[in-house]
Length: 563
Image (cartoon, rainbow, N blue to C red; front, side):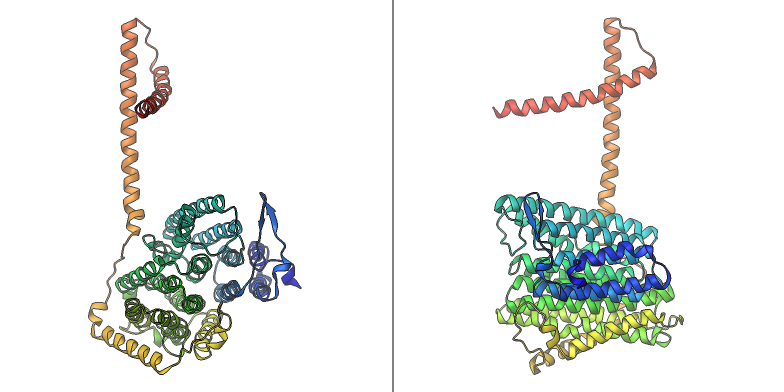
């Protein structure tokens, strides 16, 4: 069988690398077939088909499958197929190829049985996502990609350092559940949290993702943060600090999404918000909470991609992304509007949609553990989600004022992809048992009880009423919100320029001082003054010697003080 011949993630990566070799209908067939073969491999392959590889006296288990890894690999392969379907007629070949490499690397992470393999695929994800940003071909995307890769290289360095420390402490490279109690495990956790969008580095999501192409953001929303959720589920279940980090992410995403005017930045902040629910569930750590986090990651990939496909269709057909420039598009883009509304209901956990059957597991887990404050905060956050993603996005884009724009619905492949994910959002909400069967632990939870449904409906209806009562305050202007990203977009570059200027002045001053000293010595001892060119050359070489002498002198002083 083909599943025994190649790792599902490597199959998708190889397919992406070979994609530029095809053209026309063969490129289309190849780009759609490879994700389907990868999906088949996820379920047909077994651990015995992929023997371990020896590397530096360690056995690399690059394929270890269980219920949790297969759950994530399944939705990643589905996302790769539907994302390619959405964009294959319009996107650049660079973007499609990078998206397949990106998705294959994510599958590689979830099947990694050791920390070294995990790190390799982890860094491949960063490269794939960076190329997706570059494929947008805009100046804003270029600058965003530079900031994006710096953040992820920082996370990669911390992760690699943590892995080395952990292996030194334990002698094992196996990727299993870890307890925070050493420098290595702390660094590994921080490396994971950077990719999950935890504070204080949450802003890279809203800074980078909206600068991708109309379809690029669909791919970016699916893999990096959800792969980080997987590794937290695998490596740090029940870690208390994750509860509070998750709550921070939830309300951070809500506040900034409500302030935002750019429809894609609204949905980017919403990613942080929704991932916060998953992080909180991982921190609670019970089987119900972990099942809820895993299920919510699965449903989130689909309904968030649907929302971004709807927003991407609007951007593709109108060229506009600001809410203040849009409105009334339901008249000429009815299918896009309907699909966007379905995604908005799903993210708001409306009954009979996929978000309801997953997010409610996390809130119920907090009740079971008697975390009353956490439950109240999660309920309040659910109302906030409905405000910014459930109502604000569809209302300002498809309704509110008539912008005068009359674009048609997008091409048929984009419509088909939206319809497919709309079907998934409703089907999983109506028949949750199919998703529950895939979860890592046995599920003894019934989402459709009178208490669950009535509580959620009341919450959503009152938050909807609040939105329309406060509608004048919800109107946005042509502004952009800066949060922590101001540090690395503005403050750090200014500090670097200031430091560079000071360093230049210090070097210039040292050069002048050395020149005067040399001239004085030559005058004192009756030497012959050399030509300016030779003198300048000698000064530059001497300056380097002076710095070395100063550093050595400082070292000797500290050494003598110590003894």
